[in-house]
Amino acid sequence: MSHEAFLQQAIALAVENTKIGGGPFAAIICKDDKVIASSGNAVILNLDPTAHAEVLAIRNACQILQDFQLNDCVLYSSCEPCPMCLGAIYWARLKAVYFACNRADAAIAGFDDSFIYDEVPKKPEKRQIAMQQIALANSLHPFTAWQAEENKRLY
Amino acid sequence: MSHEAFLQQAIALAVENTKIGGGPFAAIICKDDKVIASSGNAVILNLDPTAHAEVLAIRNACQILQDFQLNDCVLYSSCEPCPMCLGAIYWARLKAVYFACNRADAAIAGFDDSFIYDEVPKKPEKRQIAMQQIALANSLHPFTAWQAEENKRLY
Image (tube, rainbow over all chains, first blue to last red; front, top):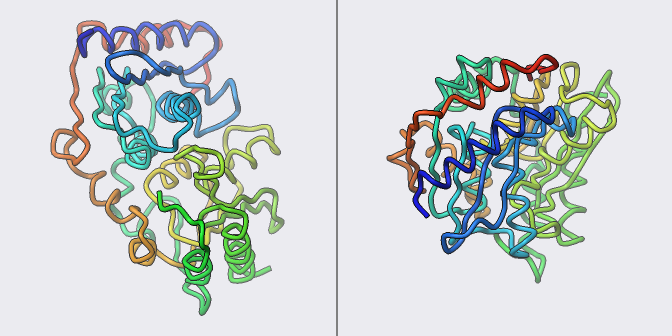
C-alpha cells in the first residue's frame, strides 16, 4: 500500500474518533507494509494529557512486538506530531513518519502544537511555564547508581 | 517543604528505581505543597518508550485528580525533562517545573535528551528520522468533523 493509502486510513480513524468523544487525531504504525497498531487521540476519554494518538499507537505497537523500540516501523499520523509525540518517536526510534495536516492547521483548529514547538528551544527560565534547574550536590547520584547496576540496558 | 527537599525526594526515588530495573530518573508532582503522585522511569520494565518518570507521574496525578489538566501542580524531576516530557508538561498545563541535573548530564550518562532537543526545531524533512508531510485533499476532515460535534471539549 502507498503512503497516501495509510494516511487515508489514519484520517478515517481520526474522523471516526471524533464520533466517540475522542480528539480529531489518529495514528497508524506499520511494519513490513502491514498495520500493526493504531489509535485515536484519547486525552478526554482517558483523562490523560499524554494520550495523543501517536503516543498510544507507539505504546500499542511496543506491546505487540514486546520491544521498547520500533526500528523497522513507520508511523502515519493524520496531523504533524506535536513535540511530545516527536520525542516519543525518537525514543521509539521509528524509521520514518508521514503526516497529512500540519502544526499550523492544528493551531487554526485550536490546539497548542505550534505554541509548544515555539517553547521547546527556549532556555527553561524563559518559557511560559516557569522552569528552573536547582543543581544539588547529589544531582548525579541516580546516574552513578545506575552505572553500578550489572543488568542495566541503555534505551 | 522547600523545592530542594522535593528534589531530594525525586533523587532518592530515582536511585531506588535503578535497584528495581528502572531507569535513573524519577519525578514527583505536588499540589498545595503536598506530594500527590510520583514515578520512576519504567521504559524497560513496561517495554514502553513513553514511560518516562514525568509522563507516568503526570498520568498518575491526572487519575488521582480525575482531570486532564494539572493547573495548580508543580513537577519536581531528578533530571531536566526531555522534549517528550516537556510537551506533556505543556499539555498538562503544570504551574512550574524544577529539576536537579540537566540534559548535558543525561547525555554524558548515555541518554538522547540533548540530541532530541537539537532535532525538534529542525524542519521535518531535515531531521535524522525521515519525516514528510503529504497533504491530501481531505487532510482537514477530522477537524471539521470535530467542530461539528456538540459535546467537544478543547484541551
